[in-house]
Image (tube, rainbow, N blue to C red; front, side):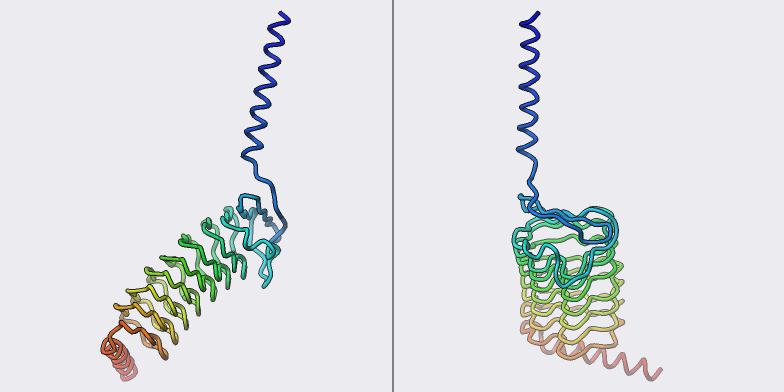
Length: 256
């Protein structure tokens, strides 16, 4: 009887020890944590994962509570319930490679992912209706982007300097493409601007040096200065024809 009890005790202790070892091997230590909104908290663990939990909007500030740890962040997880990604939230996270944005998010603030050099892709949920200026500026490794179909304005310099961006999908909800929106996107070869767009801001596609094909929808009435400046592979004649067609359309609308 005693032998049996001893055996069971040893087996139990071994099982508990094994579980404790497994748990400790998989648990991550917290590097830093804090508050980033009225009902929001953040934590950065030693596996370089940054997680935001709670409900509501992130604080807006030029400086975030995690500024000292920007280079440590490689993965960002935003839990469902967060509605706004704050201004400059992850700007200059130069080692960021992965981010999860839930469908609860409606706004991506200005400079949110500015200069995230190693970010190659991002899925923006269709719940997002506002993407601020400079939100993805100088994301040099970003290769493709699909703009959600609730976005009305592509703000100024939103994707400026995304030098690896080769594919962009602009939905029929967009009416305005802001100045410098896609400037220096030197890998962009084809652009289709839908019929919903009425205004293309100055320098919107400046120095998209490999741009060879542009389709502009029938509703464009305003094309500002140097929209296709230094797009060397885009035929000069094509640019002249595009601009002439838009001027003619505008004159006809005025006369009518």
